[in-house]
Length: 502
Image (cartoon, rainbow, N blue to C red; front, side, top):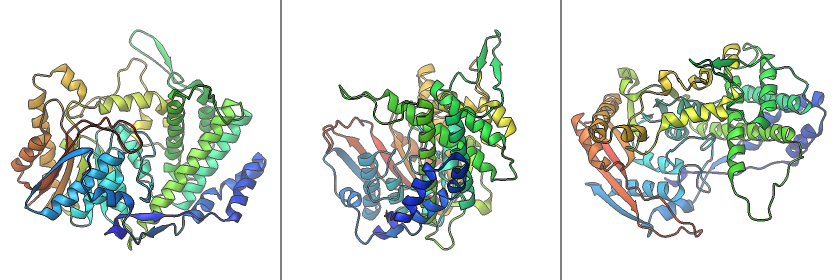
């Protein structure tokens, strides 16, 4: 079980590879382009064969096998084995959070790109032990954790989410790119970085939008000023590439990596430094430094995608690439031949988050590196990229509608929120039941909010759709500090519920 659950990744970098990288970075711009095109190949050499099975149980699994003094926990159901498996998964979730993976667990593309909330990859992996079959669906996909883990286990994966941001991030985390596409991505980004440093480029003009009062907003407004030269250089470089020359998804991947680079820079600039400590590193030229960061983050993305590919390829045949749908789950339907053996999701929590609002914020901020002019000129298909940031905040309806249980909805009408929540929960659980094959199971992670007991809510909704409650567990924080001395601030009661279709 441990061997299936975790792949210990070890990267062996040869002197030859490092020599080639140093030579590539030191070479003149004209010569570097040749070396850049082999960068993804060099990373592939490092990653090839890196995914290997561990012969002993990882530490994070050992720790999750015993109750924690940090949480109160309760499990229910006729099967003690199911209770134990669900409790183990929840302990992993609460111990490690969702933005990173435990030591010795394959990192793959988990956590690359910002989303609001999600499931811990190792916890997701543990839940798969109680799910049957070779296919899985996540009706609240988020960053695509369930899809990534499902593919690494050889399963066909389907993801649905109403948020354009979630679909944008999940699409690139789940990209099973060819080596040629990754080579093209590295080459384009490196060329654009060189152009930004020298300033020798001419970018297409930016579009402007105006509101009903005639107030004009430039497409520069959401992009941090230090990143505009890098953004314009990438626009100029991609304008020279035909869609017939490279995979169309390379264009979107380049913008995705630039968006991540801007996000990370903004986050690091907001962190307080210790007294007496200033900025470290860098050349003193912020445009050059940002160009180098962009290249570095793109290299990281390429390495992560290759690791994801390597773990997926351990299965023969490998699982197909995930199918992703940007829509309201209540309107989703699968054909009989496409129905799944399992559903695994961390659904929305009542009155806790505003996912659509967060998506708009990211699109208008770091996501604004992609302009409407670029969307028209390049083969971009993502709603996240093709939507123009409105100057008057009048966003298209797909950026405003379809969210279930949002904090905004709770604030606007607190008296009818619970009734609306249950009605929406009944609707999406009914879709889950319809998408499952007979004998299929649904594992749902959910937290309480707005004075709603979500355990009762989910189980009642399942019963209305003919789903049988098999087992579950509940965890709640009891206070105290973590091993590093920090205060754990998660006080929300959370449940993991396992249902089955007869």
